[in-house]
Image 1 (tube, rainbow, N blue to C red):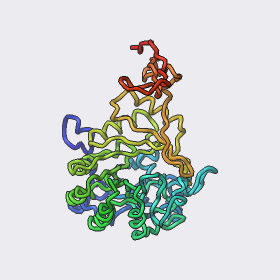
Image 2 (tube, rainbow, N blue to C red; image 1 turned 90 degrees about the vertical axis):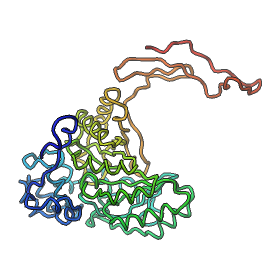
Image 3 (cartoon, rainbow, N blue to C red; image 1 turned 60 degrees about the vertical axis):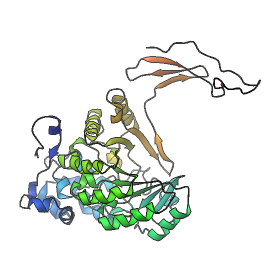
Amino acid sequence: MQLDEPGGRTERFLSVGRGPWGHVSQTEWNDWRWQLRNRVTTLTQLEQLLALTKEERLGVQLAGHHLALAITPYFFNLIDVNNPACPIRRQVVPRIEETQPAAWEMADSLAEDDHSPVPGLVHRYPDRVLFLVTDRCAAYCRYCTRSRVVSGVGEQHLETDFTAAFNYIREHSEIRDVLLSGGDPLLFSDERLEHILSNLRAIPHVEFLRIGSRIPIFLPQRITPELCAMLKKYHPLWLSIHTNHPKEATAEVREACGRLADAGIPLGNQAVLLRGVNDDSAVMKELNHKLLMMRVRPYYIYQCDLVKGTHHLRTSVRKGLEIMEALRGHTTGYAVPQYVIDAPGGGGKVPVGPQYILAHDRQRIIIRNYEGKVFEYPEVLDEQPVPGTVRGEAAVRAPYSNHAICS
């Protein structure tokens, strides 16, 4: 790897070299289709590129029975081949622990199948749906929440019924938000993706569209000017990217996100808290700062879902709370995402965070700040009349606290 450009803040974004693929032309290297055709997908390929640990070798041998192995050449070059604990390596190289699930882990931990009215569509929240348009990704995260259906070797096969899905959305006027996910929708050709977007945009009550994608991280070459020009036609359209470690925020990723942002597409990041990857407040802060410099808003930090074979990557919730405590007040609010647990069994995203409310009654609320200092704020009852209005003789004024707010 080399510096993107000398001096200034851009030195924080490194450009990824071709490494073992040095014989390949720059034109081929920058072709996203070449990257897909030349992914690392077998034990033989992987062993030619790095010395595997026993746990990794066994994991790769069994990957075809759980979640396939696939790493783009671009993303592979972020791996420290001499360090088995490399945070990039831990995310994409299989390990034997994946075949040894903990007792509380599940294939479908979010109960998406139970909330699927038609194949490929999940309707869990009142006004929005999750549209699973593909089961393939550019590379496969070893903690994938949909490992049961993604990559073609899981316990199930994704068989999306596009006609039924479009009809369901069309017939349910409460649906105002559609999230395309999978798999990764940006693996589709521009034409195929546009077919889906145009069909959804033609439904009057669908107000805005979202795409969830790890392509800008695994395969930034896919974010072409042509793709961005096509997406721009379907505003309001939002894109959630997924990156977990500051090392992933390269010069190529910054440029890809810049093309999307210049097309008017708001960008947010959804990170997953992972043991040995980003379970450190300094690492998470650096990641969030780099995201903001790429015009990406840190949106969520997910507690790792209870998916089969992910226990070796899961941290405690306590660790997540410590990280949030180290972020709030210690950096700009834009760099503080929301920490959530996607409740097992289909309960949806539940925000969790450090406790800042110490006491709360009808007269006041006692709060603490990021420094541990305690403050008092006067409470007002909701039934208190608005000044200048009359509610009749039965109206009761809320007690008023004369306590000043601490400063």
